[in-house]
Length: 221
Image 1 (tube, rainbow, N blue to C red):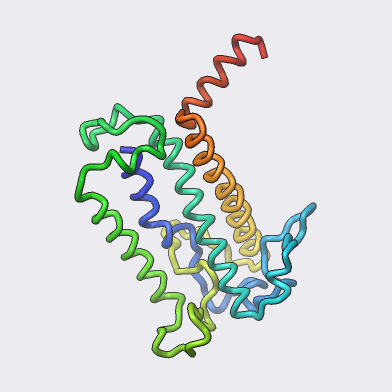
Image 2 (tube, helix red, strand yellow):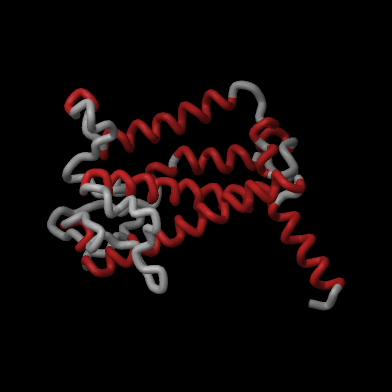
C-alpha cells in the first residue's frame, strides 16, 4: 500500500508545488537568471557552491541546474511523506488487501504483477508534460545543447497553482521559491537518510521512532 501512496505522489511530482507565472508580475529571479539574482541562498551558508559548478556555467546551464534541483527536491518531499504515511498505515489499507508491510524499501517487491507498468506509465506521462512545457523540442535544438530549456521558462514553473497561492509581489515570490528550495534540499537529505537507515538494519522509519521513544522512556530521557 505504501508503495502506491508514494508512487501516486511521485507521478504528480513533476506538476507539484510550482507557482504559475504571470508575465506582468515577475520576480527578481525570473527577470534575470544569474548567480547574483537567483533565489535560494540563505545565511550562514549563502550561495553554497564549493565545487564551482555555477561559476563555470552560462545562463542556460544554470537554469538546467536549478531545474534539476527543484525537481529532485519535490520528488524527495513526496518520498519523505510516502515513507512516513505508508509505514504508518500498513496493514490497515484497502489496497492489495493490506498485505504490503515492512520497511518502505521492501514495498516495491511486494506490489502485484502488472502495477509496475501502470506506475511507470503515470510517471512517464507526468514527465512528458513537464518536458513539453519547459524544454525546447530536440528537433529545434542544436546537437551540442541537449536538454535545452525554453527562454521564457523559469525552472520548476509549469503553471500548477490550483490554490492560487502564488504571490503577486516579486519579493514575496522570491521568498516562496527560496522556501521551496530549502525544504526540498532538506527532504533530499532526509530521503537519503531513510533509505540508508532501512537498508542497514531492516527497520522502518516509523519503527525507529517508536524504538527511540521506548528507549528514551526506559532511560528516563
